[in-house]
Image: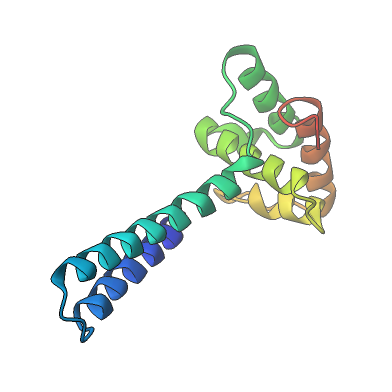
Length: 139
């Protein structure tokens, strides 16, 4: 998301620069053009982030969080040493599942392979099974 935001800011700066270099004599129309270009770039940045997060479930709390962590821990206990990291990976994996990932088991294995733990596609399949029962049943 940072890349998209940074790209939108760079595009907005370039648009301001180009608008400032135009041969138009009316300073008021230059200001209007610059404002609308910056606003469009900002909206594009906001829309792309919203689209990305549309399929991502909200961060679980309480019993739901415990159930998600238990499902992940069931595959490999080392994956939940950093609970926030595990929850973040689970939410991102749900977005992939809802979005129609082409290789969801492989993606899960890659997404959850961190901190010295390397998972197989079979492990990824078990993670997806647990996530579909807890955090993202609609996938």
